[in-house]
Image (cartoon, rainbow, N blue to C red; front, top):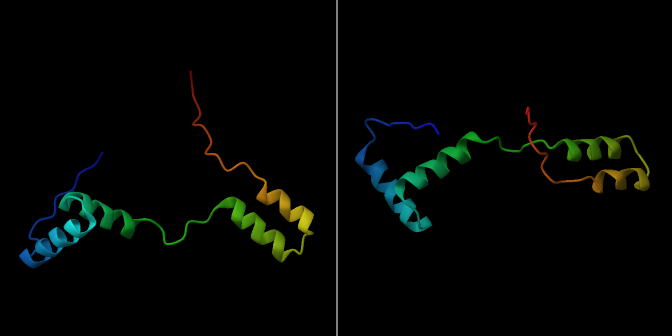
Length: 83
């Protein structure tokens, strides 16, 4: 896992991070990780099944045809093994 060092962080920012971390019941490091994860992840991840269902609605498919999209298997796929 990667690590990062932040230099020259103002004292008031560090204090604010410590307070925020305490309010969330975690360490300052865990709080910074949570902030970075939230900032870095996309605002709205497009999911293929939802996109296909939306296309079906726009194409005016019947409700029976649209129901097929709702019945899809939502379990994550297993990674490919090269053994």
